[in-house]
Image (tube, rainbow, N blue to C red; front, side, top):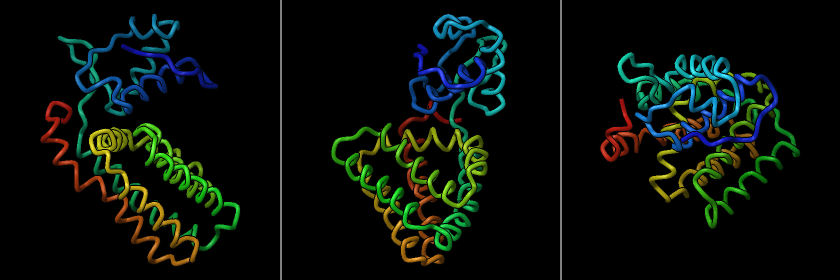
Length: 225
């Protein structure tokens, strides 16, 4: 069942697209779930046309699959797309942290430190959804502080399967300390302007998902392609 989110600025198509996409990433719509234009249009109180357009965009990102005999269903996670998204992020973000080591000033470092404080609080009483948001915000701050906001927005579109796996990992494994600790390492190296160590720490961080993806595939075989 589709639930609504707050309507964002922009077109109705974008509103539908973002709503359904977040439902998929957050595992409110599991792989294999049947989804219809009619149901979504009625739930979100929009016409069928923007829903059809949003479905086309989601199908292009391979989040939805259209099957002649059974309709439209949420796609399974494709590990080849996970790896491609991770590869792009690793190579770009290694360059981003080197930029941060050279250019970040006190205000930008303070924003990162504030984010890390919230991550620590999340370890005590947060949810995996909130930690996912803080994780994304930490990386976004690196891009924005380096003047690469459009680059961040570009790679986000390539990382939906990677994001689904990240969310599943957080939901399945409540031991989030490693994730937060790696963020702190990256911050520490940026603060000290140790570019080579920051780059290596980012590489290690973005390989974290590799250690658990096979275990997740064994535990949830129906979720994977």
